[in-house]
Length: 179
Image 1 (tube, one colour):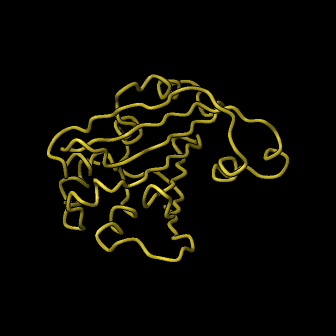
Image 2 (cartoon, rainbow, N blue to C red):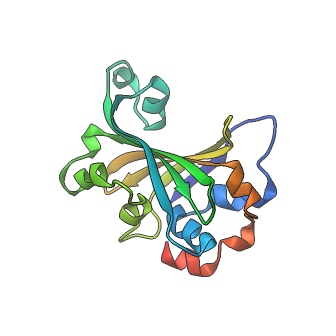
């Protein structure tokens, strides 16, 4: 149900990170399994912003919709595992058209990991994923179809995560079953 692709870069992600970049299901559950405790979420921004042209394209908008201003609820957080440095920097983009009915609760997450909400009833959601290297680290950008609503979540694995000993064996069956 998902589509994953590595975007062209001059280098490939470290082998120990590839399974994390391509993992299906709730990254929250997998990170908590690795940390041995719930994640700590620190918000750096939460509010309305106009989407950039790149963000509109990532959400799958086409044609004249790319030229119109589009407001979205944006949430930017740092996810902490079991040390003092953040493991993952994440940005969630919820176009206003996606925030109807029960989805409005996505604006009220506060310190709750988004994975608790998105994967509450389903372990895997239809998605399209792209992986790229940024100045902060390797990032997976995933456009989810959550009950017919498009959401874009970018998760960047920060240096502290890599130094924590991340490898494929960290993604256990237990974490996948929780996802």
